Length: 337
Image (tube, rainbow, N blue to C red; front, top):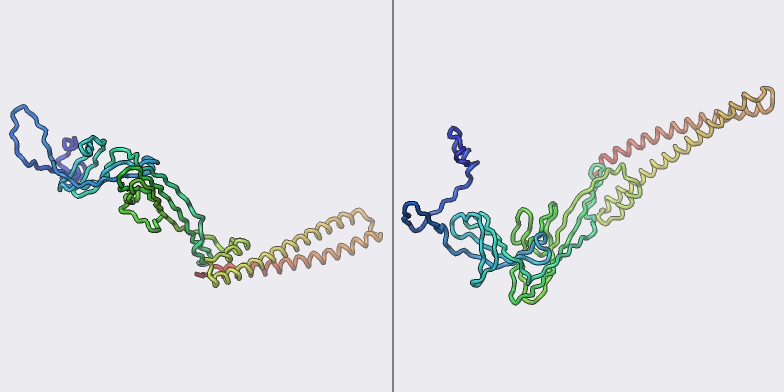
């Protein structure tokens, strides 16, 4: 259908490459003569290919038993097209499978039945995150954390024959394999580990993975308790601890100034309220009385106190502003490995 719809005015190189794909050519060894209005079924490939008996375990396919299968290699020198496959073992029917398209010399796994003689149980355990590196880059704290996860495969082979087991372990993005177990190959979605399962025995295999990730926090926005926590980590170098101690002292100094400002504003607010109360009372007291004179004297003292508080607040504000600007600049230039 694709060839029938092919436009001959277009480029053959580009058009056929898109709609036809890779060609496959088969040469029949023996010529035959076919009578008119007759048909024949001819074998295109009739060769032996190497195959290894294996058991394939993928938890997403079957969480308890592996599949019986074969690891085959297309050693025919020709492309093999996909199609159904019947598997016989020692002359007895063993199961059905489907063969994918195979290029010459390509290897594939073929599964055809459930291997109930082998039982597998997987257990996954994750370790708590650990801080492995701490540094400051231009006022930003960079924490490098490590996570580790271990999957334990408990394998029991109840048959009287040793099994070659292939375990397909999922590939997790951003995680890498660590430890002694190494995969024999990797596909897009799984690692493949090939192990021996002794007859009548149990065995345990562990696959360990880990990942590292970073967290960045501006030192300026951190509260003192978090800074003190960083200083206690073993990942913090002595020089970094010293710089954090200086930052902590500067932050506490700024906090003390803010507290002083809050206290001065509170005093100013109380003095202003008292001043308003006395002014209201003066309107209700006769001018030639002793109480009136007392109110005037107190009002004069309050005015002096308010002016002094306002001056103190202004001075502390200017001092805090300069110290904060100096502190921010020092953090922007701070880099400690």
